Image (cartoon, rainbow, N blue to C red; front, side, top):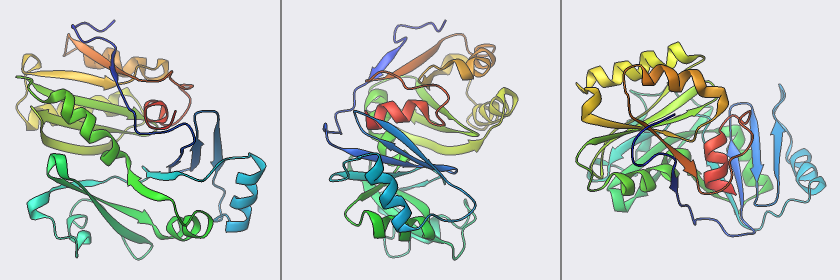
Length: 262
């Protein structure tokens, strides 16, 4: 079990209304999420046609009137807003992420945090969704999570490290008070991979266990070895539970599915 006074805390997300649809853009498919249902559109070797996706949506009777596309198949980069040139967002990705002509670059701002979020969108997905859902809004996983994490960290004396585990990778956010010190995504295929990158970050920031709070976003059986490994060097670990009931842990992003879409 985790210890600490904030064990099993909740992030309250009131961003969605009853009719809203979130489509999580993943590496292997699209997760359609509403308060009433969840459906996964798996990707085959070829790009689905607009007609095929429209037929699939119609078959599942999904209301697409208010739709948000949440991209999370590729990582984002955060840029301090005073340094952000909205005319050239691709400049901030070149040193962090390999992109080419098959991508377009999208930037959005979080004014309350004085940050810009820059991320690549696979061009074929942009074309597909513009044809099927032209009025859908676009955002990134990072943009959705940062404001609530910053709000929780504000006023805390210790640094706060948040870990969002998902299939084949994890997202890490490090705050000092309400200020973001680090945001990055790392590959992981097992607990050893995860612990390697976790230790790397703590060494880079000279963090001793007593100097920061470690909080996992959600707690799922599939990641038990990860929690146990982290506890070997950090005795007090907390878990943010989604405001709504958690989905099946076999989903590639179980925490975010509940937090953003139910």
